[in-house]
Image (tube, rainbow, N blue to C red):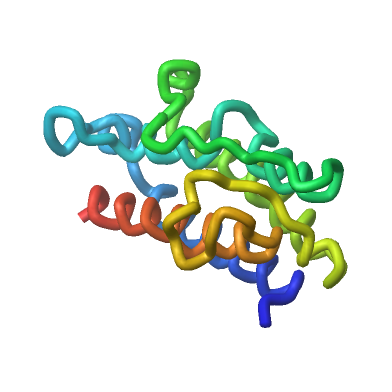
Length: 158
């Protein structure tokens, strides 16, 4: 069973892993695209931060604030065009802030809150289904989405 504390711990683990990979990169290294059309480290960080600071937490908070909200997802958008003037260090600080707040939020949830549902059409054909609980959606975000991008950063850093 997924608990609030286990979700918080997963967020902390992902943040620490990203910090370990990115903190020693120069801006030039982090801005280097491996191939035409592929994201650089700075683009991946910007994507993980989301459209605006607080968007990851805000999306999950809707599970609590609304009755079965519809959560729309825009996969493949980096949001880098609004952050391309930031340094790697600034992006890393924003990432840490975003996910630190997300971890605090998740860690403070009750079992009842973790079991609230939303409609996520993107998941219709997935094993989770179109109506995930908050804990299922948070777990998918961390273990599938964020984990995939941590792997992407790891590959870019090699």
